[in-house]
Length: 506
Ligand SMILES: Nc1ncnc2c1ncn2[C@@H]1O[C@H](COP(=O)(O)OP(=O)(O)OP(=O)(O)O)[C@@H](O)[C@H]1O
Ligand SMILES: [Mg+2]
Image (cartoon, rainbow, N blue to C red; front, side, top):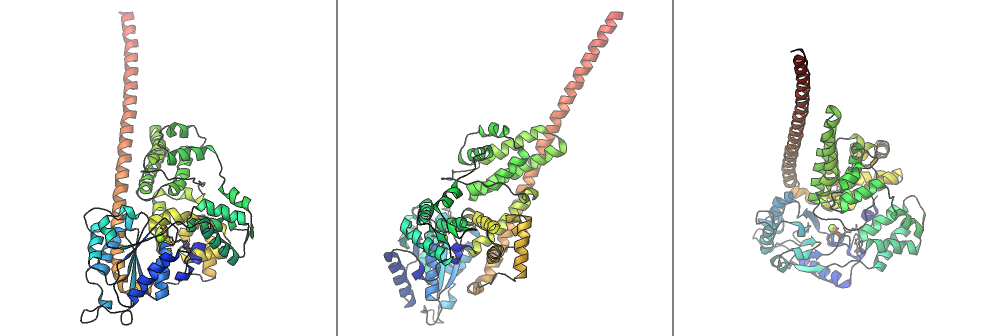
């Protein structure tokens, strides 16, 4: 299974954190335990430093149930509101309306992630809704999590106790990596460990993922292995992609036209790599642009309209390029499209990807956006390179089905993993009893949201189709006009000839 999950801290003791942080959260939890209400905590800090882990470990240590919700996910808001908002604390209120301590009523820890991504807008689901909830003094322990706490309004910050997480030091990272390597029976150079740690820049998740990637298929890891793993191929396609993803120079279109790859091939390269570079809204926009480009390519083939071909190329290069609101910093190792990726329609791909992300997000306790940027490619990489048994365990952990596996790692390997899972009866053991009370509600909200999403997608696709049709009609007209002028010209010429003949004879 994925090492970041396998070695996720179980209790507070397993979390690497400065003692002042541990002291703050333990005191806070002890007070709750005694029945003394506390302000919610706000865990703030960069990715991969243990914010989510500490929250989960804390609940585990105190035997609290956890309700994990994502603030940036609009669909959660009515649930949040019901749980935290409108006196939905029945389980912890006595008949007289008194707050019960954990001896009588069991505490539920509400973990609200991605708080810095909620919208500032006044409407329901925005920051103001959260403020309203916090002002009611929730009778349940609540931990908010944010990467950028200073995006939050001072009013909100005043309602919580801030706990600042810092990046882990190089030595802290190396220590964790060392322990994991030992448990996994891998012999690894100190130098290699430091190289991984340096590259991760205090993000332990990234470091552990890198370690697993580089240790794959090896019992001994040397510093060179780490360096080689980082080096990339520098082909022209990679350069063009770099220009698309990392810059705004529209010259990329003409450069792309010089490639050996035809637009039909190039689109797969771009499609396979957009998710490595874009996230959230940017990714969504880029993928729409790509599916439009793909539709144009389809028309080119069927109708031989070569102007549409140019249009498609323009969309997949400049269109994708301009879809980003910001450039992702740092180096990105691009991948080549798999054979299987080329066989699936873009629409189907979007759907599959969405479903996989849903599962990764759910079982790894992160938002879909985060799963997209932090997890998706590692999982794909590991599934395709690890031994089948481990891969099958990972697949079972994320509850991936056959189709999803094939989509991720290709037909052959996907089937292999799937068959192995079936044969060994690997499947996810659901332990979500903590959600029982809310399961129905969450389902209901999710279903509604999904329906909405479907409708939106259909609308967009309709629009795309219309757009393509309009372009096609225009194209047809142009062709017609061309033919028409040709006919006229020919007529004229003929007329001209006739005239001169007549003249000749007259
Ligand atoms: N302080 C830590 N102690 C032990 N393990 C850690 C720590 N930080 C990160 N990890 C490891 O990295 C993984 C990811 O950490 P976690 O999900 O807690 O990060 P996070 O701070 O919530 O990041 P994000 O802001 O991206 O949500 C964990 O599953 C664990 O394996
Ligand atoms: Mg987290």
